[in-house]
Image 1 (cartoon, rainbow, N blue to C red):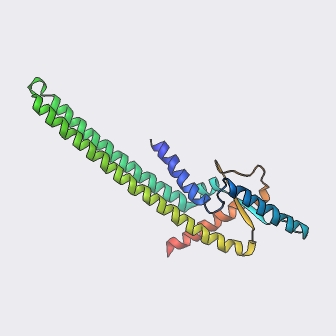
Image 2: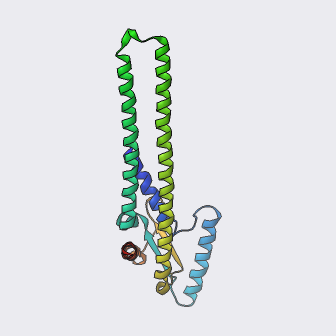
Length: 205
């Protein structure tokens, strides 16, 4: 379960980063973006210039930006604590059940029904508590996502003042829409270095 959780958190944070770099590549938006890109590229080439394009590798951002890694570890630790609390609570219910059954034939039918009802109520309470905790953690993860989006938008707005890229595309596991990539257009290292510097400075404030 923790392995699946880690994967889910990685996906959430990777998507948070990816949101900043790509349009919604589905349906009409794909065609619209491609058409605009072709028109702008053709115009620049007619003027003897090359289109200013760049791309960012999301997997590298997810694994090399310290802020993202730290937030992911926090979420994983909190979910593990939730899972552990539930497991301990279930073990407590099992202990109650084992102690009750030790009475054997001395247990009346009425006592058995009452005990079973209480056990079910406790189990439901445990499950409800986990659900509430998981929901809060989910909300926290999306707040983190929003924060990452804001910080990266700020960074790219400043970064692109000098670069003046027309389009910055994204590449990564499950998000790779480019069939060919010239490594000279890869600005991932710049983004990682810049974001780590920016976020480290903000944490010291």
